[in-house]
Image (tube, rainbow over all chains, first blue to last red; front, side, top):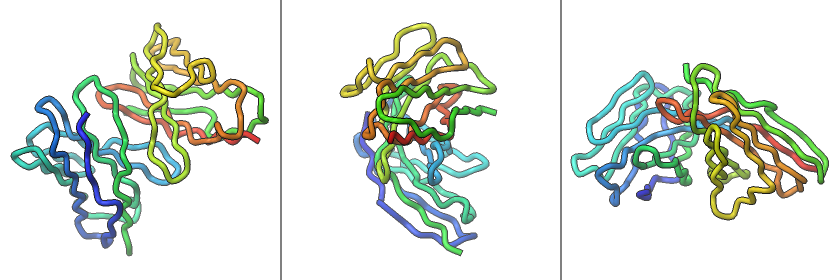
Length: 109
Length: 112
């Protein structure tokens, strides 16, 4: 599986959009970009995934660059409950999820 | 939808005893389930892949005789930590493969 690079931490203001970057320059053509988050002492929660098109659901938007070497997860209106570790993972279908260090996001009032 | 439960949510056991953790997919069937372990301030590490009706596949460095996995039905997988030692104290998390991979809430194991 391709490796990902995420900033170790970031702060964002409550009510503002949070933009979480992820670099995956070695991504293969059949690998998807997945985002999960883990709130303290809980299991990870699936957020969104995409292959090459931008995706949006009720939780977030995923913007993937045209060359697919990087992506951005957007939380449109961050709340205090969005404070968590966010993991960007690239994997092909039927492959295992491999978690890196992720980005610790702290939403401040 | 896509709810995965774990039981117990936390357990304390004495060194040398065995502990069983259950993982259930509540509203979908899962041919494949996964078991992870997470130490404090670290990321999740995959321990094994559990396939219904067949033997689990363990990741390198994980002792299959110590961490017994049984996936007897499409909604239940169990992890038994045998002869537990204090170094086995950790946060154990399962996941089940549905449309996506969905995670349980985790089980905090403390071995005294």
